[in-house]
Amino acid sequence: MCFYIMAHSCHKDATLPLIRENINNLIKAPAHFLLNEASELCPDDNLVVGSILNNESADAKFMVSGRIFMDIINPGSDQIYIRENNPVSFLGYSCPLLTALVDIKCMKEAGQFKISKNGWSLAIITLSDKGFCGKREDLGGPLIEKLAKSAINICISKRYLMGDDSTSLRALLTDLSCNQGFDLILTTGGTGLSPRDITPQTTERMLDAHMDGIVQAMMMAGLAKTPHAAISRARAGIIGRSLVINLPGSPKAIQENLEAVLPILEHTLSKLHGDQRDCGMVI
Image (cartoon, rainbow, N blue to C red; front, side):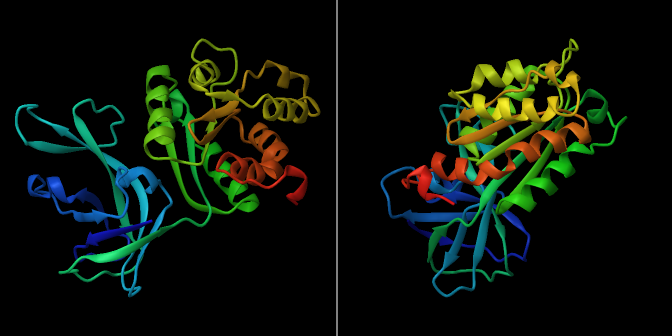
């Protein structure tokens, strides 16, 4: 799919929203403008996190690195404002954030950009009341990122730290899967039996399909080390086109559980995203 974009001048690693032409006169903040798309479908359909946009002359290159929401202040008017990092927007519009991968000069004429994606996008959610309050260092998130990158091709990864709150987790999972389009979402923490351990039941209520084999593989790996692994209530499954897996909170348990399923993640994600090859043909 191709898009025609008017790009502002920006340096490498700068991030600006991509705004559709029909509302560009309403935006006062700096933005790139989507002038025209090749499809009648919503142009955001294929601009999931991790997507790469290249123009024909190769002097402009972006990665979709997130999304923002713009809310209509008055439904009877055209006034809107930008509200970042909020997955709930009833009267608004969601648009991609483009991060420049090279220094980009101002494009006074629309350039044609092609979309591609090489690798998987990874979101890691650490649930910890103490970590969220700054009383405990998050060791699990960085470990998960390291292990995942060692096993599969990750094109972009983001880490999130939050308290053990079901409403907040539900909102973030919805945003990461249905709005931003992350391929793989790994949570850590909140899988035990304490009153604040809400991760499994929150995740389970959101799953479109369960992946019980992943849960069983992690349980077997944990039980091989300690009988306490039986206490884990971790869940795994699909939300939209995102694979979601709950992991324990301790670094030792994270490594044991994640290493049990790392060998099947590439194949699982490929099948989830439309790989038509027979499973026996995939090495």
